[in-house]
Length: 435
Image 1 (cartoon, rainbow, N blue to C red):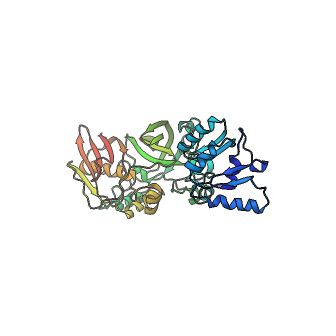
Image 2 (cartoon, rainbow, N blue to C red):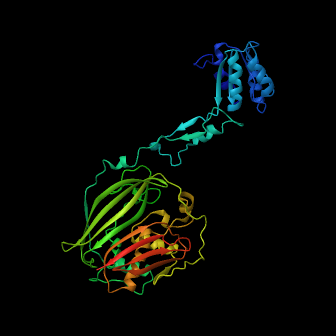
Image 3 (cartoon, rainbow, N blue to C red):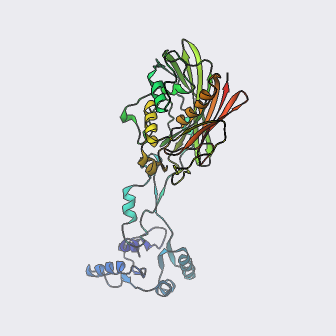
């Protein structure tokens, strides 16, 4: 018998209501043969306290002998039992012959119910741990399982979320372009004042720097105009598209108009996802230069991804494409890229956080960095063919220290591009159409 004083009183149950031992009923308690002392001691205390003889009785022994005799005895009117389903079935059959009242606790796990807004990251409180290990043995009256009510579908959070357009301005100074050129070990800046920006290099501009107090534990902003109101929000950049009418010119003031394009809920292999597409229109001198759409995926709560348990930093990919750009991104490169793009997400610079909190084997290479590397291929191998449109998709993460190759090949009026490692041939893919 576990927690004997409480259990003995609760097991006395002649009808649907539990009646305490203090109500005057007499009982015979047969404790587990493994924990008999825990019940014999309360019997001694009851005797010292002056409880009349015969009110609280304890007999010890094995269940198949002593327990069976108690259940089958004709003077026993109520039987309470905590234990296995198999023994409970035998007690039920034996008690049925004399119409005995029975109370069976078979496999109950005393669930805790924790709501999604409780603010417990791991859904387990210290109190649960204390009650789960309150006594030795197998306490029946304890909290063993956490149960969280089924959350509402993700699309319900987006039904009333309709953020309006936002307009930003940026002078497009030459400094960020020179800085990223240095990070990528280029011989010099890819553009100077008055020159066209290479495709996707506008990501260095129109940056938002929230105060440190406005960042979450993962480094992402807690709130934002285009951040959906999803609880325990997890964010992933999935891909995007870009139509270039005329390249942005470095050093000329530019305007960006951002708006919500679409919100779509989908179900994948790892659960429900909310796809948010943000549309961005860039203008210079009142003329539209390029229109971009970014697809961002949001989840509620963290899901375990399928990542390698360890990284092989010595393995090389073996692509056979005509355009190739090898790179081995290290933590310093990723840290500098995070700074250039105002990206404080800790998966890109905090290795212990990556392993312990996110389940990654190492620091994660930025998805936008992979896309920029892909666009370096046509810039270097087809410099006389300006890009008119492009699309890209970020499929599998690459980690710092791994050897990657940006691969590409001409195709019809454009090119097909992808990022390869020894683990995966297509971590990221892109298609470009030349003007």
